Image 1 (cartoon, rainbow, N blue to C red):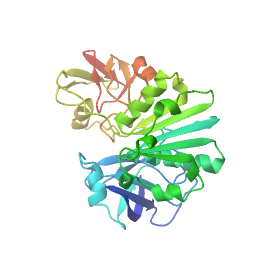
Image 2 (tube, rainbow, N blue to C red):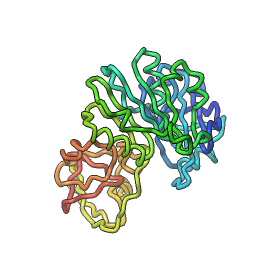
Image 3 (cartoon, rainbow, N blue to C red):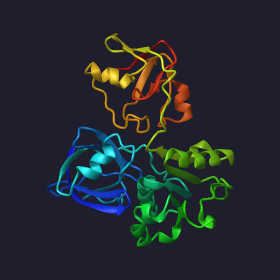
Image 4 (tube, rainbow, N blue to C red):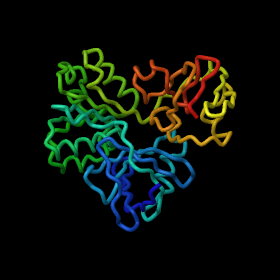
Length: 317
């Protein structure tokens, strides 16, 4: 764990605050790569993940952008209402499940809403290293477009196109045209709301983009219908202890109730923090973190949201 001070809290766009974090003594923070995120431990006891959006070569600070979600379960609301400049927070070291492919000859960056945070960091990195790229940034309206002035003042401003839902129809994102010609060496990166991401990713798949040239990171999952959920068992591989997971609880909740220490953060299946190895059984995958091939392997699952197709899962715990 790292203690940081909130150096500044700035309203960057409608319902979006930008937070600058640094060590209280001014010492260097751990290095990070474009696409990395940190866990932030909030005053209300929740833990939430936020992508770093400052230049990856900066070591004296981290910067995050936080959208206040109207359906917040307490995370973004706490950041907006409880966390102020001068406060101290505990954070994790950066982790990166959404790295740049440095071998790429060209990069296409697609950001939707607050999904701009890791994408902006990628643009900063690519511009600094001389990489070939273009960035498309989609928001509902100009007033909800975070980091717009920062992008306008950057040396890569001409490589960024803004797309506003309420703007002139001629500037609306045309994913099919932009992705029409998949080329060897060109990599696609997508982050944003699920509907936006599904549109871009489905378009890329339909147009023949190879899976290994497409990279994505979800920051929220669509609600899951639990009406058909059934109870199942989990068995701890280390002790043999068997626990029942009732239909109205997640495997993560049951594990935590038994004081079994398992890391977790988003509780939606988007971050991978709680990813657990499966020794026996067939998971019912409901996460957005793993790729289809990883789901097919059935050797890992996310206890925060996924369930079981078999009566029992034996976990490497």
